[in-house]
Image (tube, rainbow over the protein chains, first blue to last red):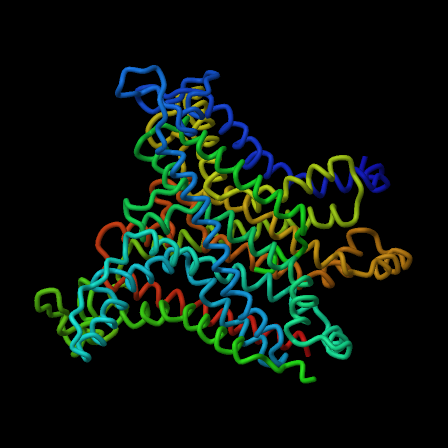
Length: 307
Length: 294
């Protein structure tokens, strides 16, 4: 038996991959199937699941409600559509801002002297490895009504004798946006850096020799060659922003409800796992569509593991 | 043309972004020394050493002086337990995912087999779906599974299967294994097969070849895969949140719980310790890498 295994290359490969594959099937694929099944069910009085085949959770999510004031059978309730739209637009803006902040820094580090490069890179890793929850807390301290930012503005205002009312920054959509940008910035810097670092210097020299000015060189050489990094970074930022609920929970209070908060709420306090499952499948489908169209054009390589 | 020449705009932008990355961290650390218990305004350092004395919400004297909150932290049993849980989960899940992830990388890079495309596809699942989707999926799986098992075996009370440290560990392995595999695979793809062939020609069998030739050459890749798995596990909040149970609180879960109630500078002290450890680890790593480069 062992001898046959030694000769059978295909069986060896299957054997080597099987623990990982088994793990992924049991803990990823089966849970996804279960989520799908449950999303078509209904809840009972104790928050349990009654299996069935009903689209009513999905109808609720796209705004077709059966709980109407005016006695009609169905009416439009935009509550959940708005939550989905808000999550999508927050993820879009976060990604855009993160790219514009990450790119110059990654460019600077990639073209720094090799001796200093690792120090600059290290400075990006420290905030990244500082825990996610701790980083949200830091922004809570900065943004609250008697927080550091209001303190500084107040101090400056007092020096110039300008009347100053503390700004309400915490529990606003802006606070959530800033928090998201801060949380995910390092996830964009590292892949962009990795792709920029690969560009050979002779390529820049050739561009310069052929008469391209620095701006043209950037547009025609640097930017296209760094696209795999930007794409990988976008995937590492956009997808988690869509599903995160802590940032909006802590910095948005009850003011900013995202699809992540909706799902968490259904599983923990509202106790309707069937509706939560449907919302989570919609979330997954939305991110898969975006990822598909985005990577189809550029593709993403090993930059995805640059973090 | 000097390749290291940079436009002033790039320099200024870089400086500002670094400022943005570090300003919150500096504030966080400073407030760990705050004398004010409510931790809203910075009321100065705890001024004196001696038995703890309070004036309203202000700590005016402490056996540890300005390090008052670090001493409180050291005496906090819940933090100790959470730290132990966090490390146990990270070590066990990293070890497992590094071993099986490396095996999978070898299989995908070196062998052809029927289920290879399927295996490669499933490795991308945890990367392209939001963590919360995975989290609630695993929660559903365990609650349904445990319900069935507990019912079938008639388990009651403490004997019942429930969410805890075990469920967190298996879930952490599930999301970190693909990252290990991808890192090791990247390392293997640039690897010259002729060394292994030479070893085989000289009479070494597959195991000896792997142990003496392949593993030493891919070790840096395996280590960085393991390191990635370790940091992913330490940092994880969402998956842990849905798969943890009583007695299996991790540090991120503990801090989250505090943020929703009252926050004393003790949380800042905890954050400061965490940042200190990260800083030390990053510096150590950089030293190791520069030694390897020489």
